Length: 202
Image (cartoon, rainbow, N blue to C red):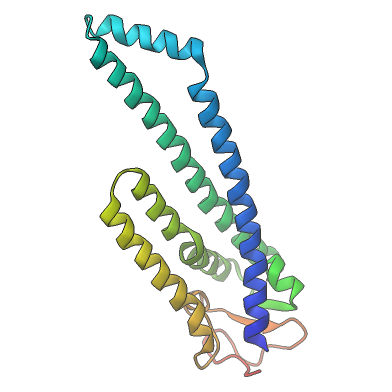
């Protein structure tokens, strides 16, 4: 029962992350669109590149194209970075202030102990397992590092599964719980053990 509630709670929290990801994607799309449709700016930059290239039209065109591509890549990478930071802040703020995320609160769960250092570590591990490594794989792909991107993507999948599947082991604590020294409890049940002991079996 607890495992099902934890899975549903994670689904709610991840849905919030997905909403933020969509909003960042829309924002990035508008940034890129504004960049490539700013004709006066492009004309000025292209003219400057042509003047400084001493008549090398092909070289100036290539430089302008590469400059635009680099800016597009930077915009996309900034969006991935923002997603990682916002995910961490959501996890950390909820755990530090409330002892639960929105998903856990709706499913009647809480994280113990509710201490800043535990919340910080748990938020960091959860963010890395759920979002950060995947974001790194995408950034590497955009940068043209295909093989390394596939490798990092595989690591992301393994890390995600390890974090999730350790809940079925004795103690029913995820990798994030084990590294942070926390446990997930029913909100109406009192903790019967500290973070170093085993969690109650439901």
